[in-house]
Length: 138
Image 1 (cartoon, rainbow, N blue to C red):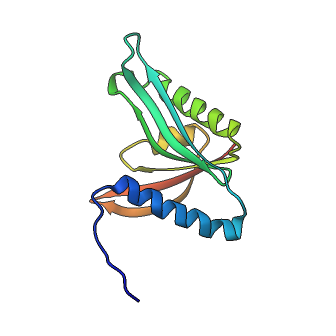
Image 2: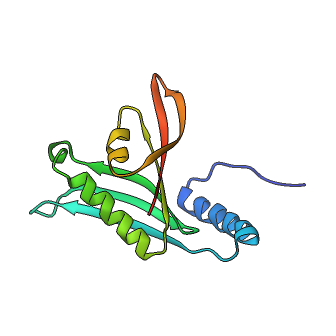
């Protein structure tokens, strides 16, 4: 078997190639699948992004990859609104469950208040911080 291993400078193209191969393989087990990106932003009066969430729907599951709210906007329900809008868009795209992960110092309590429940935890993932995986049915 002759192969050449190397680090790709263009990680976007490498990701696309690996994802295409993986999706093709998975479809042999799962049948045709749907994949769609989801992005929700919250902007202030001047158009500046002050919060948002990014994720993807795949196999009727929403994976929330990133959630952020500017520190000065926290505690004002903005995070709840962003998460609700993200979930609504995912449901429109066919998602029936959501997954996300967070660190112990981040927002696990916030997500639990939004109806998420802990599915797994890696203790001391980094320093003394746990990595917490959560799920939510829609």
